[in-house]
Length: 345
Image (cartoon, rainbow, N blue to C red):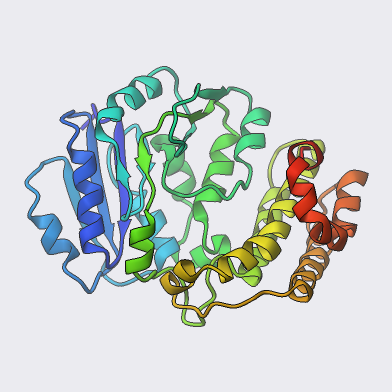
């Protein structure tokens, strides 16, 4: 259908009740210029039966022939639907349906390449970035949550046509949306839609459910090894972008600080959280300062090697930032209080 403005893409696996809740939250909106496409990754539960109880022509259900893994299913979910834009929503979260008309009105203002919907409790002014330099600054490997990304369908299909799902894990690891966002940001006309339209998973869900987002070796996405591996992929991808050396240097610095914090203090915080550990089927653990220093050193050596290997130019400030990883970790609790001044590049 040519009149569809938004296709809500819902990758699902083994979350029957939550997937049903997600879909119903969207379909409460009576508009005929939206649709929902659920791409189920061979769920062993009754997801398909529950969705089959919904009688709405705007809902389309696809079932993979085999379980292709979460990252690949994420990309698979983006292939279907006729909307001008593809809105990603994970099958555990909901949309505030009466806010959809305002979102559509916003999307109709420009031919956006990329839009991200935040999750603030209070509405703020929307932000539009016309130039690719502004867009990449705001969307370059930000590790944003996948739910809320809105991709221009035509531009997205130009990217996905060259993607082999069998190589998804090695090429994108856990976060394929980050690479799609960067490529679309380079086309300009990106935006933050800062109106509350999506509702993230609540603590009750975290307490009562188990995540499927970890591999057979139980390497969860927030483990330092995974964060460092993701950083390596970011640098390899960054090296191929057609942007200025100055912008590449800024992105390296920002990504490095983000991964440094994620691999140390954020990791420590998550491993001490009983609810998070239970959700991911891992044991709670007190992460010591020496362990944080170990991972900061590992990240530093990885950064130096990957910057050299990918021939990425970085300025003196970024070199110093990498060299001073251990002091930054040591002083982070103090530095974080003034991080907007110190960590802004």
